[in-house]
Image (cartoon, rainbow, N blue to C red; front, side):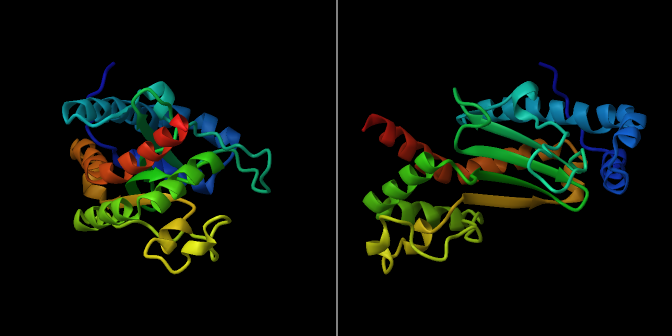
Amino acid sequence: MAGGFSGFTPAAYRFLIELGLNNTKPWFEAHRTTYETAIKAPVAALVVDVAAELVRRGLPLEGDPKRSSFRIHRDTRFSNDKTPYKTQSGSVWYRQGSGKDGAGVLYFHFAAEGCFAAAAFYRPDPEVLGSIRERIRVHPDRFLAMQSSLAAAAMPLDTSDSLTRMPRGFEDLKDSPVAAALRLRSFLVRQDLSLRTTTAPALVGAIVDVAERALPLLRFGWDAVDEAGRV
C-alpha cells in the first residue's frame, strides 16, 4: 500500500472550516475534489505510514485505509441534527487480528478546532467494560501500577467519563483505592497535537509515540478481555 504522508495542508483545515459553515450536499459535491485531495488521500497515506511505524516498533496494532478511516457522512437516523457531514476526520489502528470495532484502539482526530491522538477503550460494550472492571477488582495492584506508569509517561488516565455511583456488583469497593477507576465508562489517554505537527511528516511518529506510551493501558484491557474469554 502506498503511504508517503507529508502533512495536512492549509487547504485541509480550510475545507473543514468551510464545511462547518456550508454543511449541505450541494456544497460538498461542489468541493468534493478538495475533500478527496486535501483530506481523504492524506488520511489514507497517514494510516499506511502509521501502520508501518507500528510494525517497525513492534507494537501490536495494525490498520489499513479501508478499515481504519471513518466515513465523512454522518448517521442521522437517530439524531435531531440532520446535517449530512462530519466536520472532522477520524482514523483508528486496532489490535492485530481484531478490527476497528474491537476493544482497545489507537485513534487520531483531525479537526479545524484541534487535533489529538488517543489510545482508548471508549465506551466499550457491557461485556468488555465488565471484563476490565473485573480485572481491576482481581488485580488492583496491577491496575494502580499501570495507572502510575501512564502518569509517569505524561499520559494520565482521563477520568471525565465516569459514573457518579459505583457500578452494580462493585459497591463493596466504594472506599478502595480503585473505586474511581471502577466508575469509569471509558479508559482513555490522549495527547493534543499542534498545527505544526499535523502539517508535517512528523505526525506519523507523534501518533505512534502515543501508542507506545499508552501500551500498558491497552495491554491491561486486552488481557481483561482475553481472561474473560477463557472463563
